[in-house]
Length: 354
Image 1 (tube, one colour):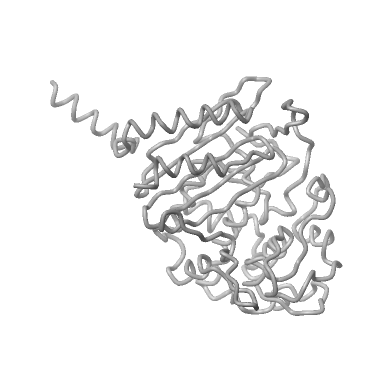
Image 2 (image 1 turned 180 degrees about the horizontal axis):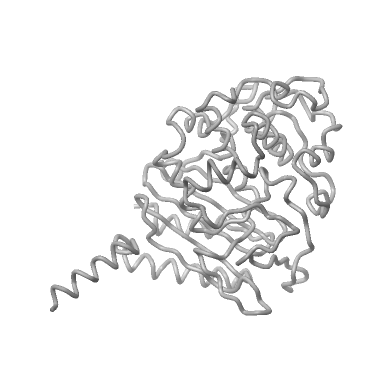
């Protein structure tokens, strides 16, 4: 009888994929996360960690809806991932490079010929690396609450001059990624949202990742909170649909871990196209930007690290990938302006650093 019980315990352990993680590490991570949540008055937070492609820790903290006291569930609760959307879109670019529908060093105008001509030409690679000179938000543009298609969204910035000669300097731009979604749509001859669903989310089993449509009811979507004078309240309504490629997707922490593992195991893109994404770009003055196409590249204790942060109305998020350690960490919160860097160091000390 004991052998039978042991057999079934091993099966459950294998299916949950929690056997490989030290209980001590999980206890430490839970303690650190709870403390962090309380210190920063975060309404809800979801964290998932995988090692060698298996989920080893996945936990929800706090609430997705403070009024209804709805608990965060890592496999279901959908958060705004903000600029991590750029990394999702980067994988779509890589996919189209693999099938020779996009050339990264080709001009934008090859794919979007009706975009207003600028003083300088610029390439897809430069757009993806924030080196094209396209501007970012001005004033309160990030609070735009008008429903627009991705093409209509170009109207917000298309008549602005380039800020500088392309390749001169890294200037972060969500609007550059708005342009890239139109590139994808035109190159693939398919609606951008449908392309992402069919070629990225579906094959990576990201069942709970979707565009943050403002006019559709989306199940398990968290409320989005801001902090004002020390008090937590719901943030203003915004429409992120037109800039989905740069910051308009919803996802779960578990879906993002599945996505992050593509940067380690390469199931849907080639080794060659992945290399294009994770090779740091260089300015014309020979300075590394520490950013490839849609993802930052750095090291921690000589361990390679790919990452992207996200910040928006009711969102502070991070995706971290350590290919040499085969570890992926996803952190999602439903509060604006949360500083995650020290918390990330704590999690890295637990799950990444030997």
